[in-house]
Amino acid sequence: MERVYDDIIPTVKNGKFNGWFDNLAPEELEKLWEIPKLRKKNRR
Image 1 (cartoon, one colour):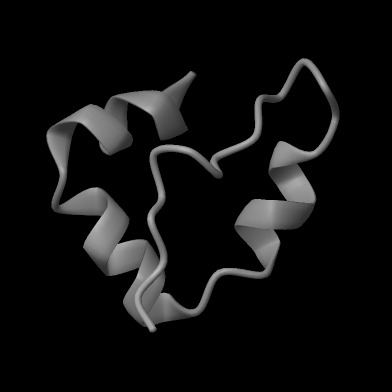
Image 2 (cartoon, one colour):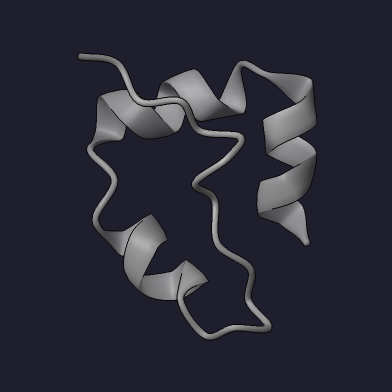
């Protein structure tokens, strides 16, 4: 099952982004980076 990322990307403000990001598989990170809207969210 493929993740729906837009609704599950936590913010840095709530302190959960780093753990979420560290647990991404390389393939998942590549998929996120291909979507400009989500790439922008990850750069915050």
